[in-house]
Amino acid sequence: MIQRCHKWRQKRKQLIDQARQTSDEIERERLLQAAEHYGRIVNAEQEKIDSSRGANEKIPDVPADVAESSEEEEIPLPDFIENLK
Image 1: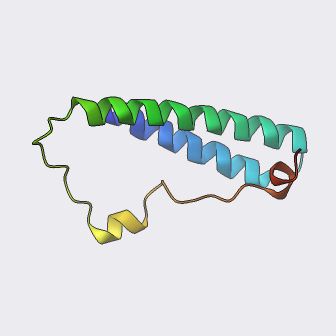
Image 2: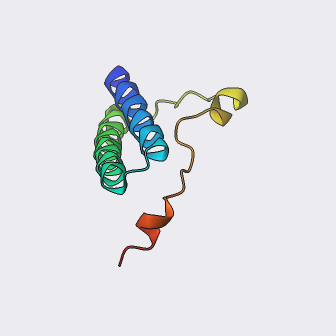
């Protein structure tokens, strides 16, 4: 489960990076929607992983240098998405 989750996080990051580099707004929107889809998959899978851990199981600490390079960083939305109404 954890490997799949990691693979989907990488795919999500790749799609977001592609969206940042494209100038076509329609293609950018398609890429961002695909990335959002992978984000939902990752969240659902992470919930399964968390629920499968016992209540007494200690979640391993993440070293500070790994936490800083985490793929879960906040990624601002492009202007054209923020301005949609």
